[in-house]
Length: 630
Ligand SMILES: *[C@@H]1O[C@H](CO)[C@@H](O)[C@H](O)[C@H]1NC(C)=O
Ligand SMILES: *[C@@H]1O[C@H](CO)[C@@H](O)[C@H](O)[C@H]1NC(C)=O
Ligand SMILES: *[C@@H]1O[C@H](CO)[C@@H](O)[C@H](O)[C@H]1NC(C)=O
Ligand SMILES: *[C@@H]1O[C@H](CO)[C@@H](O)[C@H](O)[C@H]1NC(C)=O
Ligand SMILES: *[C@@H]1O[C@H](CO)[C@@H](O)[C@H](O)[C@H]1NC(C)=O
Ligand SMILES: *[C@@H]1O[C@H](CO)[C@@H](O)[C@H](O)[C@H]1NC(C)=O
Image (cartoon, rainbow, N blue to C red; front, side, top):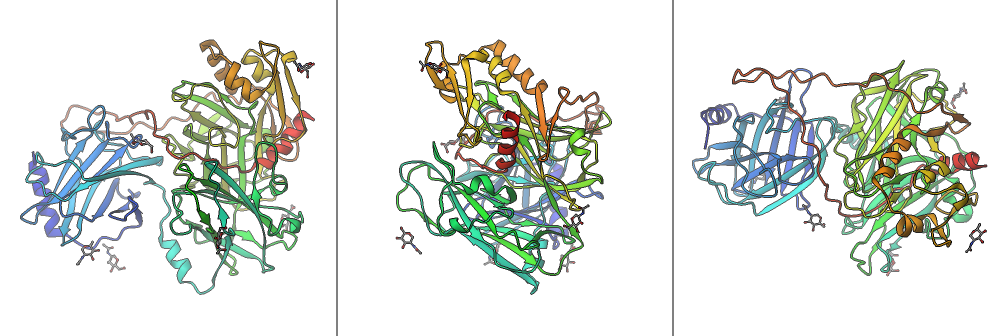
C-alpha cells in the first residue's frame, strides 16, 4: 500500500532532485553491487540522508538489524516504477525468522530522489536519527549491522515486492565514522610519504586453521615524521584469510638477530622471543577495518628516536577450510609527513591481564561482564587532561558489548567510547565526534560483556580464537610523558579459582613467564594433576550459584592495578554511585497520542563466523603479572 505521503514525497523528490554531496561511503557487498553514501545527522539537523547505488533495475532494500538477521529489523524498500517514478516503503522484518516484511504503521523514510539507468538504480532518502517509532531503528554511535537486498523485478506496488535474489549484512559505524575526505587530501599532497611493512611470502599451514605469524622489521633511518593515516593492503585473493594485523614497537631492544627469521608467534610450548620484548602497540588493523585517517591537525610521532629501530608485525591468518597452497605477502602502510602537525597523539591501554586464571566466563550465559579498573590513583599520574579521540575496543568471539566508563568525583560522565552491538569481525577503531576527556584522578572502568549461550564449558582468558580478552586501546592528544601507556587490572588467581570450587592446596601456580606458558596445575577429584585449561574442560561442573558468585567476583574483587611503573592495591571496586543515563528521547507522536520513547531491541544471539585473535599489548600484562606474583 502506497501512502499519500510517499506519493507526494516522490513528486517532491523528482522536482527537487539535486546534486547532494555525501561525506560517508561504504560498499556493502563483496561484488560492489550495493553501495551506500550518507550524511550523518549534524547539529543543524536530526536527519540522516542515505543514497543507495545498486546494480539492479528492480527494487533495493536496506535494513538496520541488531544481529544481522532480518527478524525485527527496521527496513526500507525503494524502487523506480514502470513510469519512472521513485517509490519508497518503510517496513520491518517479521517478529521471528525471515519472511515478507510488513509495512510500518507509520512511514518515516522520506524519498529525496530516485533514478535508474540500464544497470543501476539510485535512490536517495532521509530519516530521523530517532524516529520515535518502535518499528524503526534508533541510529546510535554503536556498530550498526546493515542488511541489504535487491531483486531485478520491478514491483507494481508496495504490496507486490518479490523475494530478494541477493542479500547480505555489513557492519558499519553510521554516526561517527571517519570521513574519507581526509584520505583524498593526504593522497594528493606531494609531501606525503609512505612506508610499507610487507610480510614475506607466508605459507599458510594446512593442518590448522589459525596461524599467528610474527616478523621483525627494521625501520629506515628517517627524520622524524608524523603518521597521518594507515591502510591495510591485503594481497589480492587473500581477503578471506587475512584476519588481523598488529604492529608493536620494540623500544630500544636490538632485534637484529631476528631479521629475516619470521616465525609462528607462539605454539603450545613456545613463544617467539620478540613477542616479549616488543611491547609498544603502534597500530592495528582487523578484518572489516578501513583506512584510518588522523584529524588534519594531528599526527602520531614516528622515527622520532633513532634508538627505536625495530617493529614487530603480528599477523593473524584464518584458514577455516585448510585450503592448501595459500601464500601471502600483504602489507600494512603508514602515510606520513615531515611537515609536522601541531598536535601529537599518544596511546593509553586499559585491559584485563590475559590469562586463564584472570578471566573465566561460564557457559550458557546471555550476558556475563568482566570489569577492568583503572582507578584515580592511576590516572592521577597524568597532570593535565587528555582527550581520547579514537580507540579500539577489543574482545574475541564472545564479545557482545564494551564500554569505557569515566567517573569523576563519583559521577559518571557521558562516554561514547562504547559499543552495545559489538562485532568481532568489524574491529575498526571507534572515532569520536567529540573527544572523551580524562582528567587526573578520574576513575575508569572498562566493561566487556560476553554472550556464551553456544559454549558448553568455561571460556577463559587467552590469545586463541576461542579464548577471551578485554581491552580498550585508546589514542589521545596532546601526547603526554607518561611512565606507561598501560593501566591494567588484576584479580587474585587463587581467589578466582576458589569461587570455582578449588581449594588453595589443590592449585599450583608455577613458572614466571606469563604468555599462556605459565603452568597452573590443579589436582582434580580423581587426585590427578591436570592443567587448569583441561580442568575447565573436563572437570569443572558450573552451577548457577557459581555463576552468580563469579559475576560478583569479576565485578567486586579486583586486587591490584598496574600503571606500568608500579602496582597499586585497590580498595575494592570503583564505586559508581551515579551512573550516566542518557537523557530520554523527546518524542512527540504525530498521531497526538502523547510522547513515547523508543528503545533499541536487545541483541539476540549473534552469528559468529570466522574465528580469530588479536594478541596485543600483552607485554605490560606479562610484566605486571610477573611483579604481581613475584
Ligand atoms: C556538491 O559539490 C559540488 C562540487 O564540489 C558543488 O559544486 C555543489 O554545490 C555541492 N552541492 C551541495 C548541495 O552542496
Ligand atoms: C548508471 O548509473 C550508475 C550509478 O550512478 C553509474 O555508475 C553508471 O555509470 C551509469 N551507467 C551509464 C551507462 O550511464
Ligand atoms: C612464495 O612461496 C611459494 C611457496 O613456498 C613459492 O612457490 C613462491 O615462488 C614464493 N613467491 C615469491 C614471490 O617468493
Ligand atoms: C617530555 O617529553 C619531551 C619529548 O620527549 C621532552 O622534551 C620533555 O623534556 C619531557 N618532559 C618531561 C617532564 O619529562
Ligand atoms: C600432583 O602435584 C602435587 C604438587 O605439585 C604433588 O605433590 C603430587 O605428588 C602430584 N600428584 C600426582 C599424582 O602426580
Ligand atoms: C551463520 O554463519 C554460518 C557460517 O558462516 C552460515 O552457514 C549461516 O547461514 C549463518 N547464519 C545466519 C543467520 O546468517
